[in-house]
Length: 59
View 1: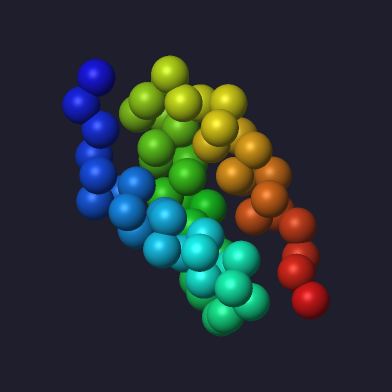
View 2: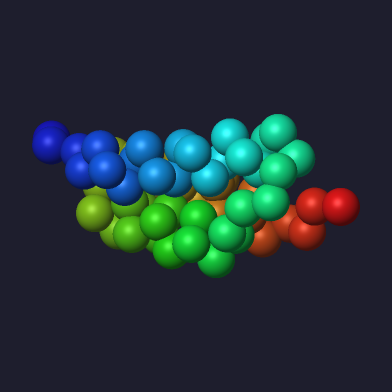
């Protein structure tokens, strides 16, 4: 399976920003996770967890 590392890297950067408490584009992260989920069934469950995390409001 060939992964699109550009999308994975972009999502990783957004998730790191979220974990560090920085401002980040939550909607862009959701779109990337949904795209990766659709393209790579082998990691679908992981992307499901990411999408759940991104639905939660962080304060």
